Image (cartoon, rainbow, N blue to C red; front, side, top):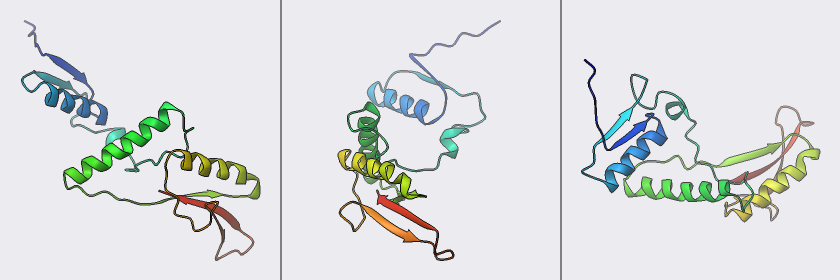
Length: 148
């Protein structure tokens, strides 16, 4: 005989999205029954368990896009959550590197988008760019823009 299970909410997938959804449902509806289905032996077994841990700054997206909006909002929400719960965060910087002078317009565009999206530049130059020369090969140059 087949057993029938009943639940107020069914969440499929035990990755970051599924777990976050189940948690939000529990907070909003504390007395509701919530079932989470996961095909693997444990949660966060795939991409959620192997992500880089990078908290994206949002300089790749056009300032008026939904991606930029959600990136900024998610970044702020995550930082607030971490602070509220006393968790550690690796507040590292990101360095964007070009390999040639021809890539400078792209680098300038990323820097412009970052400014439009509220990304803090840590470069010392007003345009946010830094010229670097390789220590091992002086003919090898790169131009970088550092952002958080």
